[in-house]
Image 1 (cartoon, rainbow, N blue to C red):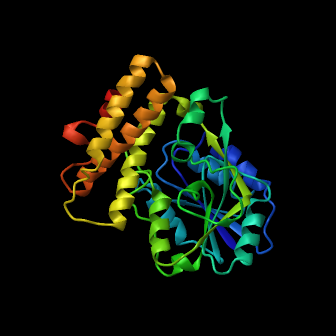
Image 2 (cartoon, rainbow, N blue to C red):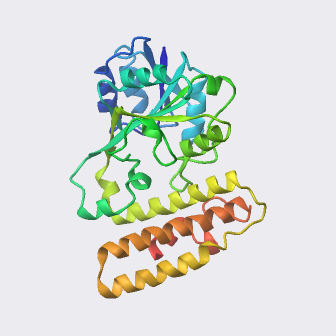
Image 3 (cartoon, helix red, strand yellow):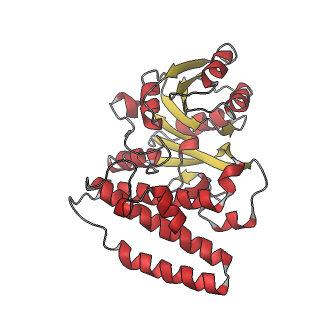
Length: 320
C-alpha cells in the first residue's frame, strides 16, 4: 500500500481534470489510496472532492489553517502503507506513475526519498523569453536529460516526490513557516524537509520514468509574475541557508556587492535594449532582494506583509 497526498486551496479550475487523470492510473501491485486536504477553500473544491469519493480510493479532509504545510501535516495523520507520495492539484500524472515509483522504491532499499520527472503542460504556448529564466525555480520543472540515479539538490520538487512512510512515523513533519500560505511567502516547502532529512543521513533517488505534467497557467507567463517568483525563491533560499548554518543576528552583507553588480547590468541592458539580459539581471536582483527580506524576517525586525524599508514585496517587485 502507498498513499498519495495532495493539498488544495481553491483548486476548482484544475482539480476535476487532475482527479480524472488519477482515475486512469495503473494501480501498483501493493494498492494505493489518495488523501486530498482542502486547505480552507472558498470555491467549489469541497463539492468536487465529494463527487470523486466513489470514483477513486479517496479520503478528503479539511484543514482550515491556511498553509500548504499545515494541510500536508494533517494529511499525514491518515498515511497508510510504506510510501508517502506527494503531488499538487495542478499536476497530471502519467498512467504508469505510481507503478514506476513502486518499482524504484522496491529496487533501492537503501534510499528513502524518491522524485520523478516533471514536464510542463502549458495552458498557452509560452513566450520565447520563458526559456531564459530558471525553469526549476520558476515552474518546478526538472531537467529532461536526467537519468535514473542518486538525486542531488535542485532535482527533486514537490509536484512529484515520495518518502518511505517510516520517515513520518518517526515524527518528521513539514515546517508550516515556509512554503505556500498567502501571496507573499518564502518558497521551499519540500526543500526545507529534504535538507533536514539529508542532514540526518537519508539518501534520495531520481526516477525518470515516474513522470508527471505540471500545468502552467497562462497568468504565470508574464514577466511580472516571474519576477515576483524570484523574490519568493530568494526568500526561501536564504531561509534554507540560515537553517543549515544559523548565525544569530548575522546580516547577509555578501548580498550588497552582488546587488550593485546586477543594478549596473540592468542599466547596461536597458541602454543597449538587450531584453534577454535585462530579464535575467532583474531575476537575479529580485532573488537577492528576497535574501534581504527574509534576513529581516529571520532577525525578527519585520512584521508579516512588510519588507525592506517598510515596503511591501509587491512594491519592491514593481520598483525593480
